[in-house]
Amino acid sequence: MTNVLTEGFRPGEYLVSEAEGFRSREQGVLLSGQVVVASAVLGRLLHAGVTAGAITGTGNGVLGTITVGAAAKPGAHILKITKAVANAGDFELIDPLGEVCGIGSVGQAFAGGGLAFTLADGATDFAVGDAIVITVAVGSGKYVALDLAGTDGRQHAAAIAYAGVDASAGDRRLVVTARDTEANAHCLTWPAGITTDQITAARAELAGSGIIVRD
Image 1 (spheres, one colour):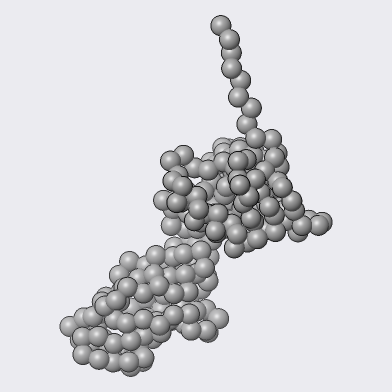
Image 2: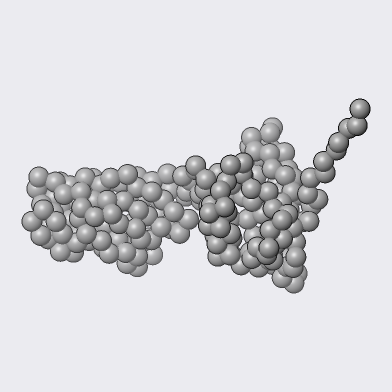
């Protein structure tokens, strides 16, 4: 009987080009329980959850489920009502650096500053100056295999594993391609079941860090 052996990708096999020196690669930590192969596309734990405080002011509307994206800054965001209208109104979202990162309307889906939610109207209308503090907790920054079902940062493509690492018994160091690199599309390992459209979106996320995937 013939035994067929399949060789996986070798360390760094996906590399087409890198920046000079050590700019493209860096050391990171693979989360305990994770096992990744060389060339695996990774996510990173950037957020440890999000909470919303009680409304300060007059209105009693309800803030719906908050989705946190890769662009969200850790820390306290302030949602402030800027225009009061019966059963409606407008608001702005101020990020932890004090900059307005989005403008929205009560009762309509909002996305800005890496956060997405809907602020619903209540029995008592909002007044100008009403505010809600939305806090994005800082994640560990550890790497994990890309997981599109995640909500803590692992759903966004952030890096590529230079070599395989087994962290079954605890956190382990690993080397990742983090920026300014050309990578061979045919030498990357994606999560099982990922679609072509999802790969396209993940490639765009990598491109945001200067990791360009070449076909």
